[in-house]
Image 1 (tube, rainbow, N blue to C red):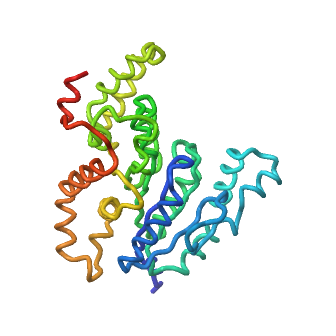
Image 2 (image 1 turned 30 degrees about the vertical axis):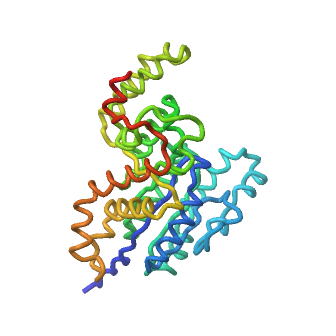
Length: 312
C-alpha cells in the first residue's frame, strides 16, 4: 500500500493589502504588538520588495529573494513595472517562500504586502501566491486598508468603493475592508453624514447629490450614478473603522478578521462556545464600536443620519 502524504498543518493569518500610504506596515506593527499582548504567537512576513527599515520584527523578508532597487537597476524598469516583475519573480520561486514559512508552523501570520493597486485589481501574480498559500493549508483573510479621510470627498469615496469591490472580486479571499487612520478622518474636510453611512455604505444617491453641486462633476452625473448602482448591486463593500492607537477599534477589527478566516471556530482550547456566541452577536458589537469611534474622532451635529439626509 502506498502511504498518503500528510496534509500540511492548518495555519491562520491575514494578508494586509491596500494603496500606498494607507498604513499597511503601521497596521502590521500595531497588530503584531496587540496579538502578542493577547498571548497569540504571531509572525510578520514582509512581502513588499520595496519595504526598507521595517519597524516590526520580520520573520520572513522577501527582500532576501528580490528587491525593487535591484530590479529597477538591472532591468531598467520604473517602480511600477519593477514591482510587477518582483511579484512575478516571487511567484516563480514559491519553493523558497514555502521553506521559509515552514519554519513557523505554529504561528499566526501577518503578510505585509506591496501597495501597488494593479496587483490586486487585475494582475495575477499576487492572486496566484494567495491561492498557493491556501493549498498549503493557510486560512487567510484579506485586510484591505484605505485612508478614512477619503470619506470627506464624495468623488474619492466612490473611487475607493470601486477599487475595494474590484479587489474583493479579483483576490478571491475572505475580505475585510478597513477605514484606517480614523484619528485623521476630518483632516481634509468635514463628513457630510454620520460615520455609519460610510462604514455600511448606505444609499449612495445622497453622495451623488453632493457631487451634482460641483460644476466639474455635474457633467459626469450619469456615469457616477451607474458606478453607484454597480457597487450597490453587488452589495459586498462595507468598512470597519480603525485607529491603530485605539484598543477598542483593534478589538473590533480582530474579531471581524477572526470570523472571516475561521480562527475563532478552531479546535484550540481557548476557542470555546463563548467565542462562537460572541461572533454570533458581532453585528451589535460592531455598531456600538462604530459609534464609539465616531464620538472620539468625528465632529458631528446631534442630527441622526435620516435627518441629515432630509436636509439634502
